[in-house]
Every structure is written in structure tokens, then in C-alpha cells.
Length: 266
Length: 288
Image 1 (cartoon, rainbow over the protein chains, first blue to last red):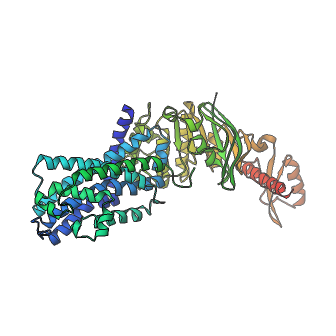
Image 2: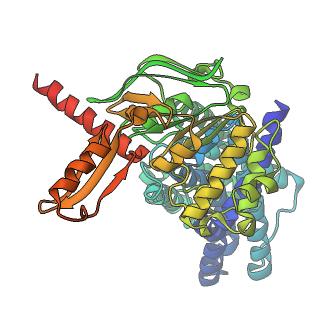
Image 3: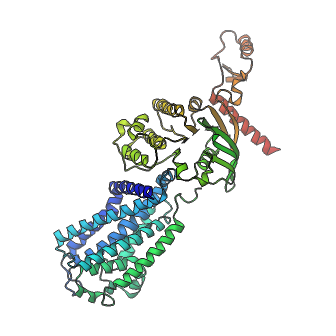
């Protein structure tokens, strides 16, 4: 077991180097939320959100951090793993005495480190340029931590499972990015969730991002902003429940469908 | 004990019989080369032994273990150089070799291995900046980093210039001297001749000949190839009595016999003759 962990830690280092050195991944999975925050924040900066006294930038920061969970875990892995399957990474690893668990430890570790770095940068940009208020209570920080951890675990597992959908590494982005984009538009990342059409709200409520975004609002928005939520509360209990269900679903799917080899090989 | 033992291995993809009953023993410390045209089944056979593919029937043992049941301790004793790869592009040569060294219980020194494949000057270069041949040397470095007991080399020198190939042979000679068992597939006949104690020629999923490079296909039978040019163009004949044939030719031509050469068949001549013979047999078999 200690060998598995030791090699898992070594894989985290390798994974991170590859994550940040690959231009596409560094831009697409890592820098994108910062860029979006700067663009949308600059356009709508101080626009008040639905008369709640919350600025757009503050509202959008919560959405971007929640999106960051999805970018660094789901989108990152669902694009990178098909590429690794195609370019021979997985085949080479399979031929070594590396425990397979170490590979997944490496992925999970990379996701967590990338996410933490991303959140720190988002907060720095938010505070420096958009005068965003950081959470002031320990409870809010605690919510931030458990929502992040649970969200990252669920979306990492889902990303590993979804990695079997793209048939080639090249086509992976095209099959992953739209999923993320559609979830963002329907989950209240860009707009006030309760102002979306009802069917859209119902649709988005089935997936993790809506709940991640809502929970992040509970961290970064004042409690008075609860008035903008569907039930008038943050619904953190329900958020935890949905994320746990997706974690279980992701775990079962990842175990059942994950492939080390491209389809048609073997 | 044989390091590699294969009995009657078969594998079918759809209606293509990739392996049609292959049997082969590779002794401890021996180097055997698999020769054969593309699609003959070399890579399929190798990948079954590496544990990547299931055989439909037959028996395979590597270091006494069925590759399908090989555990990590077994894997640690193997070195695998796969046919092509494009991975690890964002890492440097040294990062990749050092990282893979960590997977093995008693790895070789990474810098030493990098030097032995001739990549010292490229040690801090990104792998995606390497040329095709340099990239292949990295694959070889990663294959030998764990000081394997059994090394699989699938067309290891594709894209090497002649000098790099010679250096590669020296590296493999050193591994052989250290007792490494090697199963090599290659399209370079002189490579097989230099490195392998025995060569096995595979065609249509069967081993059609297996012997030492100097004896395979009756190479040691004393046959020679006589070639010359006459009004019909280039001519060449295989014969056990080259002197008589040359005498005959001498009487046919008034002066010098145009472009006369007499030579013993190279491994390549023998290999191609074996494949021709096999193709003829297949055709006759199909007709009858």
C-alpha cells in the first residue's frame, strides 16, 4: 500500500508538470475561469444582481469557482484520458509494475492542486480588480472546503467515467466542452438561476454544477442574497445529498466502464 | 527453464486468423528475433506475451507465469518497448526516465541509461522536440530502466540512422552479456543477424522457419547465388554448384560474363525465399 501511495505521489508531480506544460490544458482547464471573470467582471462589474445588493462580479466569482471544480476535474480528465489512451501513455504504464491505483491517485492529486491554485488566482483577481468580499465566517470557509472536496471527488470520478465517450483524443474536446458549457448556462453561473425558464432549472437540478454554484454562493454572497434562490435558502443539505449521489454514480460508472485500451484493441 | 515458452498459440480477429498455432521456446539469456511481413502476427504474438492481449487458445509462459495472471512483481522483471508512441511529450528525457525508474525495485541509474542510448545531449530536451530516432531511443531507455530479465523489443530501431543502430546493437549486446533474455521483432535483417541467436520467420500467423541466422532456410547448405546480365536482362540462379554454372556461362559469352557475381545468400535472400515458398504453398493449398 505504501508503495502505491509513494508512486501515486510521484504521479501527482508528473501529472502536474504535464497539466501546466500542455498549452491547451493550461488555457482551457486552468486559465479560462480567470479570463471569463476578467471579461464578464469588466463588462458588468458593479451591476446589481436582482436588487439584492450583490455585484455581478461577486455573483459571478461564485459561479466561476464552481465551474473551476468542473474544469479542473471533469473537463480536464474527460479530455486528457482519451488522449492518453490514444498516444500510448496508458499502454506504456500498463506494461510497468506501477500499481493502477497510483495512476488514479496521480489524477486526483493533480486535480486538487490545480483547483487550489485556480481558486487562489480567482480570489486574487477578484479582490484586486473587482473589490470582491472574501467570506468572513468560519462556517462559510468550512462550507467552501467540503463543497470543493465533495465536488472534486464526484466530478473527478465522472470525468474518468466520461473518458470512454470520446472515441479519439482529438475529438475529445468537442464532446466534453459543450457538456460543461451547457451546464454552466443552465446552472446559474452566468445568470440568476431563478430567472431561467422552469424546464431549464429542472434540467440543471439533476446535475452537480447547479448545486456547486448555489453552495459557492452561500460562501461568497451575504445571507440576504438567499432571497434570489428558488426556496429562499441555500439548501446546503440538498447540495451535499446530490453530490454524494453523483459520487456514488461516478464511482460505479468509473469502475465499470473505464478502459486502459482504445476501443477495438485487445 | 525457458524464459519464454509458447505452445500452439492462436488468436483470431473477426475473420482474420492473426495467429494460427505458434510454438516457440526462448531459453534463459537467449535473444530470438521474430521476422515477418507486416500483419504476419509478430506484434500480436509479442503483445500476448506482454499481457496486453488474450490468446484464443494455446499456452504462453513468460518467466514461468501466464501473462494474463502476471502480477506487479512479475511485471517488474519485464522490459517492454512497444512499437510506436507519442506520449510523455511534455516531459524532458531525464524527467521521464527518472520517473519510470521509480516503478522498479532495482532500477538502473537513469543518467547512465540515458547515456547508453545516446541521449545525454538531449537529457533536458522536451520529448516532443526529439526526432523520430531520438524518440525511439527514449522508448528503449524506458524499456531497460528496470534492468529487466526479459526484454521485448518491437521494431526498436525504426527511424535510426546507421550509426545510431550500431550504438543500439552495442547496448543490446551489453544487456545480452548481462544475461537478459530478449524477444526482438524487426524488419532489419542485418539487425536480426547481429543480435539474435535464433530467428523465427512468421507468415500468416505461423512460424514457417526457425533456426540460427547462419542455418535458417538451408543457408548453410552451400547454395550460392550466381547473377549476370544477358540479352534478356538481369539473371540470377541459385545453385549448389556455382563453379559449374560459371563455367557454363563462360562458354556462352565470348569474353567476360557481364556483371557476374557469385555470393552466398544473405539472410535477406533466405528470408525472401522463405516467404516466396510460403506464398506458393498457400496458393497450391488453396487450389487443391
